[in-house]
Length: 290
Image (cartoon, rainbow, N blue to C red; front, side, top):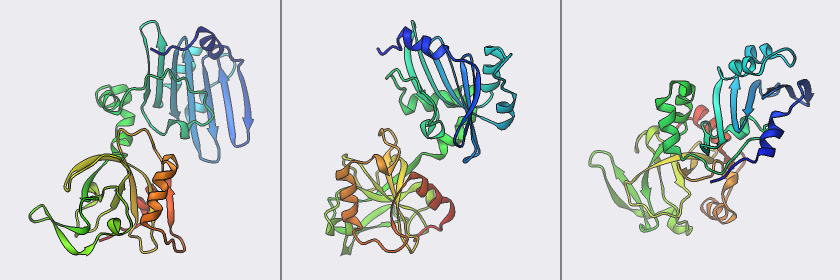
């Protein structure tokens, strides 16, 4: 089991209280804590650390302003910080070591932080359970639920013809047209996002980047990591299985990106492959396709 060394723990505890800026980031530090105001993003975050315990929080302006670099006890500062939304937790003591990513975007929210990692990361299922059970983590419930979707598999490499779903019978049948994936030697499952609607009504199409085989009609828990934007708004969302350790289109391998480009090799003005942030923008601001 991984451990954080005593030297690392001591290094974390030793911090001279100060207040300073680095570009758009304004910092306050004290014994056992550090807080940051990102003026470009309007974001306030903080970390606490002591004797092998490490935590990241999203705080508000009021908490940031109340934090004092001088004359404030560690316990008082941390009592303020923990009122924020818990982003990440790491523990390394004699009882064991583990890490919990309560918000999987913690590194993007706190790029300044020297995050403690033991190498023993809780899986998504256990983290979801903790968030749902513990009242102290209730601020994370909505954001964790929002990021998970379910894909209904509509097309696989086993079917050369385009498959059509009949919502009345719940069955798939082959059309008289070759599927685009088959024509362009694309082997990943294709389908729609269940929470967006059901064809032939408006819905979001998605592509699942996986090496696993699925059958037509399978329901897969996914997270959205990117999008192929189309000028006609018939965007194709890029998905990964919820347990896969990637979060963005940029995390895909070179081979996976090359395979995606085979599917849509021609890119018009305003079109192209984008990451999770652009995908979320499209979902919030663009109409669904038929």
